[in-house]
Length: 208
Image 1 (cartoon, rainbow, N blue to C red):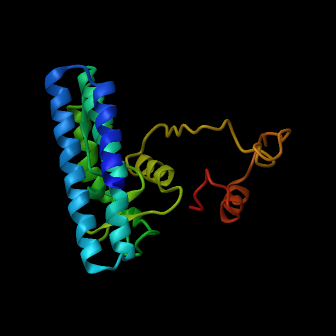
Image 2: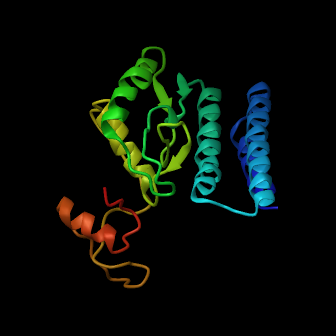
Image 3: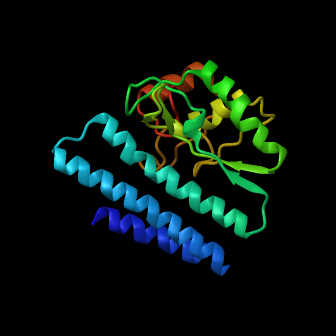
């Protein structure tokens, strides 16, 4: 039931975002294929009667894979010069499933080899955050805040001029404004202070 709801939500996004008939049919087909994969995978987990951290990472990767697929097809339908790239090709991690650590040297090497050349023929490369793969090619995830961490490390690996991360908040406040309405924005903060905040539960920051 949950997978069916996920599938219908993403199919609805395709119908809402993409008007051109052939591209829309392509998008619907690709979304259905990914959801079939997810359904078969979850049926296998159910048959085994055991859900390991490795299984959680595999299932959890489908959110990023579905959303970037739809966004890529939308951009293409709008006439943008863009390509979809699987982050697991370069985001090399250890095998600590659900909270994997990134091997930056390997990321840098693979990004130079596989990602940077894509900009020769494409203005925009769309890829995923949060997910990676270990040395055996098995899907891993980076844990809470992993998408922003992915963006920062990929940007560093390709020597980007800028890394822009858009969130639904305008900065870091002195307290949760949903609880303390008159919380004040903090104008300046060190990396050490931000890291300490993340350890104590600040949800928009990754410790790394």
